Image (cartoon, rainbow, N blue to C red; front, side, top):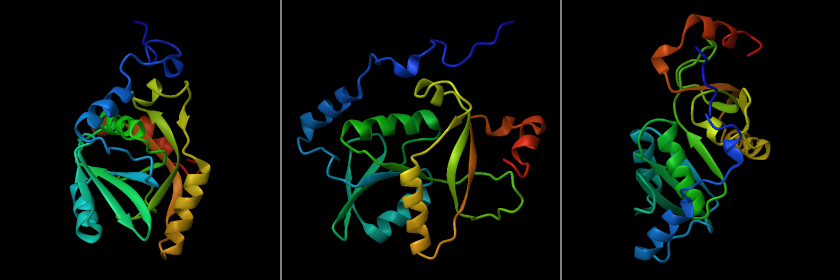
Length: 198
């Protein structure tokens, strides 16, 4: 049996899509003409309800229904930030929200969530900034050329690490592994990833 390579259509990442996220933005603006995020410094996607509840309790923010999930627009110290959570689990849900945010003008996005660790040196609650992700998911292959890794913006990553240091946080930096099959991680896959060179 021949196993398909994702995506099934080679070069898909470079082709225009049939469904255009701009259609979403146009629809939102039929009921909220002021709907734009182009004047915001960036967006944060959060995956745990507790993190979003903590954000709302400490920073408030106006709730909108411009994207799937709970989108909060926060103004603080002359800066504007969009924070979104409650959009559902997994990469497809996050990508849908990301596309909707981009269609409304957002240009910088970070995600904040929890993950398991393959390294015993990381205690529960350790803060890690991901510098590279091993692509073992289905979604990224629809957005990027074929390759084993996805890399974040180096400038945004440096800025994030610097901002954390400025707040006396000591983040570790390292690679992540994107997989949608949490309970299908096998010993044969984990062993090379958990080594000192990973």
